[in-house]
Image 1 (cartoon, one colour):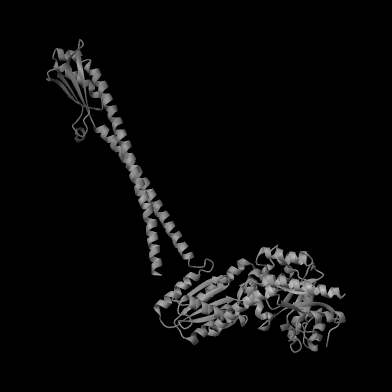
Image 2 (cartoon, helix red, strand yellow; image 1 turned 135 degrees about the horizontal axis):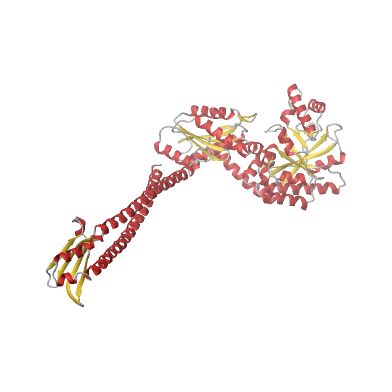
Amino acid sequence: MTHTTTNRNGLSSNLHSAPSRELAGLVLALFGMLMLLGLVQYHGLRASILADLGSSAELIAQNTSYAIVIENDTEAHELLTALATSSNLRQARLESLDGRLLAVYAGGSTHWSHSLVLLKVSRPVLAFGKPVGNLILTGSSQKLLIWTAVFLGVGCLAIFGAWLASWFSAKRAAKTARQAQQSLAWMSRHDPLTGCANREELRAHLRELQRRAEGMSALYLIDLDDFGVINAAYGAQQGDVILRVIAQRLQHLLGSADCLARLSADEFALSLTQGDEPGFANFSRKIQAVLREPIFIGNIALRPTACIGMALLPVDGADEDSAIRAASAALSAARLAGHGGFSRYAQAHDREMRERAELAEALRQALAKAEFHLHYQPIYSIHDQSLCGAEALLRWHHPTRGMISPERFIPIAESAGLIEEIGLQVLGLVHKNRLEWLSRGLKVPPIAINLSSLQFLREQSKDTFIQRLRDLELGPEALEIELTERAAFEEIEAEDSIINRLKSLGYCLSLDDFGTGYSSLSYLHRINCDKLKIDRSFVRRMEQDPSARQLVKAIVEVAHAFQMKTVAEGVETAGELEALRQVGSDAVQGYLLDRPLDANGFSTRLSTGQASR
């Protein structure tokens, strides 16, 4: 930290001294030019004065020859007095050829400046073409010195004024450059949106904690739940406001020695110094409490939650890298616990991360070896219990690990960047099974497949998906598309989103798990889905809880108002089925009517056309 400050001060000094050296060089150059111009001015004035004296001397010399010949001093003096009109004359002397002084005229008082510069003009006095004497004029250098001094003085003042202006300008430029450098230095270590430290500043803070080694400290990684959903639902500008509010609230929990950093779009890190393990665990509850305080967007109150992973220093990490790695492992464990989860680092988390890495590699092998297959859960009309569709459910049977749940491998596939390829393989499996059913002369209803928003992070992924649908001839009569609220929110605003493109091609869109996210009437109007799937969490409370039944009824009525059909998920009892019939749901699926069936089992169901009991 000290080294960084020294560098900044040195750079600031360089920024200050560089313009000063340039300015000094410029002033010296101007001063040299002024001296040169002053010398030219001096010689010009001197030549002018000498020319004036020469003209006067020529005129007087032509008229003083008689006075010299007759040696009339009075007349000679009177002739010299005619030179009084010359402002440049200091003295005039008329001498005979033998050097005898005949007359002298003093043009003004003696001044110290006259001796500084000698200005003397001599002209012979001629009589009948022969010299009879000499006229010697001495010029006054006062005018020459005054005007030269005035020129140099004005020039110096101009240079000084220019230097002063340039100096102030250079000072302002240096100050601006210093401020810009300080701003760049600050931005290089801070998040410009929230003002929090960035990852590098956090690492520097952790190194400082390690250097001081003053007791135990804690590092929290805070991952906001479904922030992408909020951002898409209310706009990026409102999302930025929410992030700033959250950062301010977290900052208020900290002391001067603590550090808050923003690591990514929706992930913060918080370093808390001085405490014990129970106190640090209790502090995580303070974080959750602060996050749950309502944030108002217009009349809508949002209560964000976050998953928190905590690592203790130096217990869980002796340096910044190991501390961040331990907190990341704890955060991964907290995410598995669901929204608002908290986990303190344990060595088992390292095993979990290794397990996830191994599963990611196994997923790559499974894609190459075609280890995936599909089960189909039938969907029935609630009115006559006729088969009206099915939801395709991805299954993975690992050669040594056995059956692995989608809840386990889908998040890993998303984080490992494999979900796009898995989605394309699902289309191939649906196509293969559908061709087999059709070859048996069976009437196949539309099969619903689930899309992840992470399938379409690249623009090319959308084109690839649409082209694969065309290549396999899986049109709107063959497929329905199920979207989670999160996927729909993240895509809803883009004109070229996969949702809008599928809708334009005529595919039926279903909104899965409705009511568990950030649904709103405005959102339903914008997304323009064809179906709403009512989440199991609402269905299972309908028999005992009248308010749950009223809530489901309201969802059904809202869907119908938007010309959407409803499908209730997870129906397991006859009472739930009857309650759904009474509130007007259109279709149902669940273990009461049918469990998920493999391709052969679903083929049998298609041939019988009725549900097993």
